[in-house]
Image (cartoon, rainbow, N blue to C red; front, side):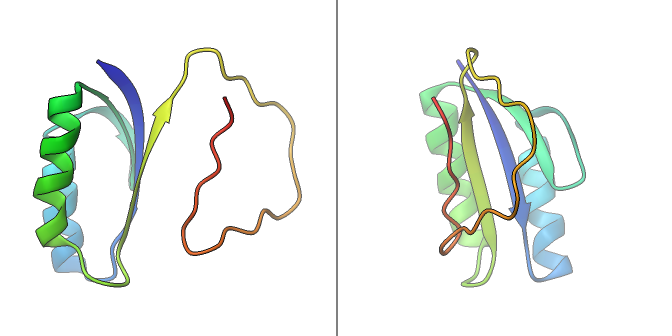
Length: 90
C-alpha cells in the first residue's frame, strides 16, 4: 500500500458529487476537494478505471504519490504549471 493525495476540480456540481462519492470510498481523510488515501496498485488501477467515465474534458483529478522522506519548507512565489502538470520532489 502506498500513500496518495488526491485533489480534484470538477466543472459540474452533479459530476463533482459523483466523483466525491467515489473518492470517499477510498479516502481515510482530507478536506473538501483534497483527500488522503492508502491504495494498493490494484486499488489505484480500480479507482482510475472507475473515475474515467465520470470525467469530462475540463475536469481534473490529480493523484499524487506521497513519499515518506519528503519535507518541503518555506514558500515560493507563483509556480507555473503547464496543462495540469504537478511537480513532485523526491
